[in-house]
Figure 1 (cartoon, rainbow, N blue to C red):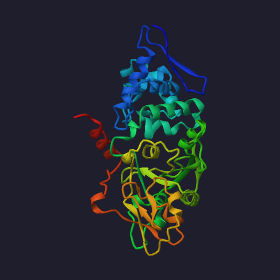
Figure 2: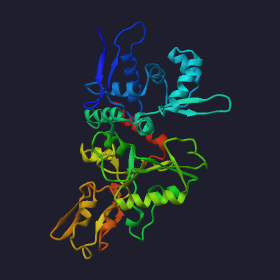
Figure 3: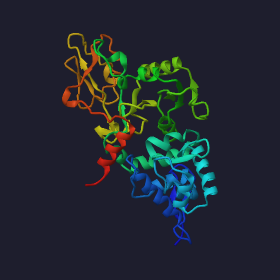
Length: 379
């Protein structure tokens, strides 16, 4: 048997060849084992018929790194335990684990005497940390995997992300819960940073760039200095973080966060043309790819003049004008509120969804994982 090869892209030059035989565990078996380990996580990493997911892993992990990652768990574990499961010398394992952590492939918790390491999922996980390594080949492999997997990552519930509304779009007499308000999440933090949107960077590299701002993904933390050593992040003060948030709103981007109540640490400002999650709604027609906010758009018929300004603004096709009156499709409306910002007569506002449509959010990421694991596990 010869090498099993996977073309990196239809436009690139790299071909990834994985050895199918040998005296020890084959390279193909190593990457397949890692793919299966990742797919066993609540987040998922579903296989494709072509095996492009193995080429994607081969682009990011060396065979030796993949062998270690394949035996890791999401919880932080000691290098000795990981080395024992992988039958690797502990000193060699530490070097490889630290190198993987520096590349954003695994978690790294530094201790006073010993570091611990944990497995990251594909998304939301090590993919988002590949900004410094994103090139045309990785972009093309990611695109192939996204399309060939037919949005499978986005079909399980709870969804990865949840929409939170533009604050100004919510009817003024209503109160917003802290987990539903982007500005409140930022204001409670002690450290802030901004990054390029990896989705827009990836799409630009496959010839599908858009006009929305590139530097738009906000990170925040409860501890000062949390991003000082992050080479992919630009450390900013709170007032600039809030300014970027407002500029994203003005541009028509949709705020999304983790799909749970507590423990948020990022706000994505997304578009349906580039965002891997929002594309699940736009391209694959998976309505549950994104969890809607607690609100949905409503039209004041007396104020609406049927100008249609809101239609171009809505990225989800939730608005139309019928007989000179804007209409909202309650199924397609995600409750982002970007439509209300451009209404010249203030005829649009966000109102609470009916009680029957209310989502019971997981308390935190751990609860989210428990629910997702249950929903992805066959009966």
